[in-house]
Image (cartoon, rainbow, N blue to C red):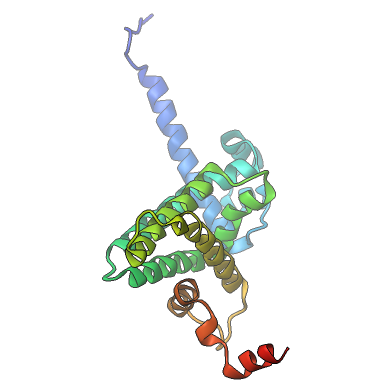
Length: 220
């Protein structure tokens, strides 16, 4: 019988752990393909059948559907965060940086609305947001604080404590409504929608309110 020295690693145990991680990655990829095809409300059984395996395999690796959503979300959100960081850093102005980040977020969510809704549903159905989802939006809040800091010229402005978090609420709400809207010639593409959201965030809606509507409100 081979006796392991302190600090040594059992080769069989390491190989088994590596196999488990590889299998887990394969199941996450299979889940993304299944949800993309079947919809965000696909059940564990639906996903397993689409993946060509049994439901018990998914339960063994992820415990339950919430665990599966969180695992898929970690991969999807990690990729989104990386792309959004790059989009913000390559901009030539704070406004362009904000528009680029919003555009990248919308573009990646649009790549598979079903997968996006699947991973964000964990935050809606559970007691609170998952650590990964919360961390992602916290990172985006930090990123859009930079353009605001540049525009205000005051790193200590109390607005920094409110505006970025509120902005993320608008970006996410408007973005998800846009994702759910049926395709039509009236629906803007992700770049136009990003520019519109950026305008709402930085300029408000005052410039887009018609004089007729303003006069009507004043009459009341």
